[in-house]
Length: 335
Image 1 (spheres, one colour):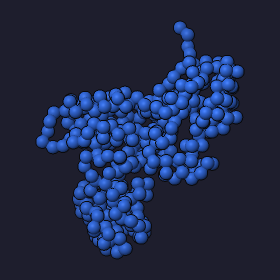
Image 2 (spheres, one colour):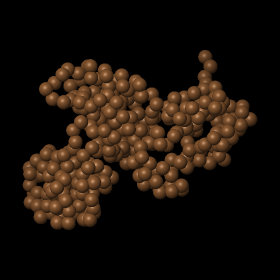
Image 3 (cartoon, rainbow, N blue to C red):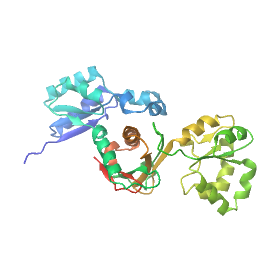
């Protein structure tokens, strides 16, 4: 039995052709038969919110600038093609979208790798259909949940703990109930758009009232807070909201300056989901409801998966298994 060894270069060239050639040389010297790269159309693979989000790098201050800096274009791939032919090694790239797949066809590579992110389009609709058919009708609207199983992460290391917030492109079926902790600066606006409001003067009474704080935590899905009051919010509600993963977080945009736009924050929080894998490699996340169209659920899942892969250190290699289920239905594996 012969073994075909592929060297995964991915985007580890950092957008630098000299580094790219060094990676090819290492693959040749190690006896590999091929070297593989990755190709993406950023506007198809990533959401606009993600691309506009901050990230410091040698190319700029946004995710878009960083991702663009790592992408090779036609000139670079023509050079890769020439260099690999000269070195006597095959090359190809995994296409993360249909545009990239068409782009790579011009080089007539012997091999073709379809990125895992592309495998969920038509198959995903079939999975959603199976999940619907496998669940009995109930007297309530059931939710679609993703069960995400990760692998090869050491959660004892903080840098490998995964947590992110994501605003879905479509409603997940039920909007989040939002509660605000505010001072006089934001009180009037918060009363207009929040499901619940607690004033700065109310905080002290909950420092010792654990039962009352717990009741509040169960009434609302998301909590937002005025930035300069976070210390007081933590003292009164932190011991209850913290373990439940509901403390207002700057990461999610739930901490607002005294002159901030409460309405905009609340609108964003209404349809935001949180994914967390800090203690266990398996986590559940709501992604839709049976009242939604299949295409809407599909779009939510694809959006979530792209975001998940982007934050994982090993990208899709850290994903062990993802299943989809309705509240009272069976889990269906997404392949």
